[in-house]
Picture (cartoon, rainbow, N blue to C red):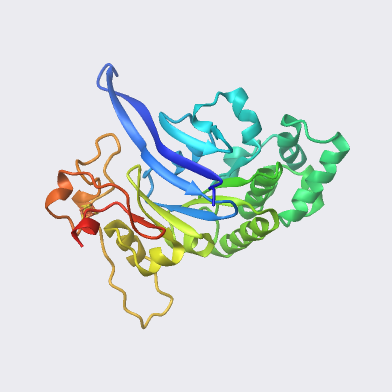
Amino acid sequence: MTPLLEVSGLSMHFPVKSGLLRRSQLVNRAVNNVDLTIMQGETLGLVGESGCGKSTLGRCIARLYKPTAGKIHYQGADLASLGQKALLPYRRDIQMIFQDPMESLNARHTVQEILEEPLVIHGIGSASDRRKEVNRLLDLVGLPKRSATRFPFEFSGGQRQRIGIARAIALRPKLIICDEPVSALDVSIQSQILNLLLDLQSEFGLAYLFIAHDLAVVKHISDRIAIMYLGQIVETASGDAVYQDPRHPYTQSLISAIPVPDPTMKKERIILSGDVPSPIAPPSGCHFHPRCPACFEPCAETAPELKETDAAHSVRCHLESKA
Ligand code: SF4
């Protein structure tokens, strides 16, 4: 089956000025040589600690950033190389939902104006068609029609996220990048928003790249999961395989941190030492080696490749060739 979107060798490096005169030029390697695929109608969960580059990767795929290197194959085009004008038709197909919808919703615009805007930009429908469409979008995300005349600040966090979702689906995209869409919400509201995303997926055949730092949330929604560490994908597999047979030591530590609902069940937690290193000066060899409980001889010298270990399971770790 042909993937809906295929990312190959994608890197996003930001120059960082430092020193007294801010002349010395360092490089923040936020995303480094990432390969991934997203199939039509599937949810790929992207998990990692804060600062690992997952949001930057999402923003590159949505082309909010122009990647430093690599390709984003979509419908015969390489989105990574296109200019703003050439990108416009593809922007319809790839939309984004943000963690804090206030960041993306214009506080001075009514919900009607916010939801209408993408339709106006893409020249879709007459004014009365668009009004009808706004009512339909509100209905789809479970908000009353009277919401159209109100402003974002008049809504709760969960309702604002529903407005953000309504705007993301206004152009009937094929892929939505969901950047921590429930992290800022109460637990009870989180499940409502996740269920709404699942309902919309089955209605419109949407694919999601679902970015989160919480593996428990990602498990609820994902078909496959990619684990990211310091700008690189270190493991990809089906949701079940990641939970039942995590192969990379970093994934194993993330899984061990998920609370078990049964208090009588004992679970050994793998505590990692130290913080995530800076992407400006990543450790040599395997970037995870200073924190890895399984680190052995070649790890500090030689960088492991992301290798397929069995069908649909890939791991970036020297232990795989040792086994
Ligand atoms: Fe740990 Fe070595 Fe595997 Fe890196 S390559 S995760 S340091 S065992």
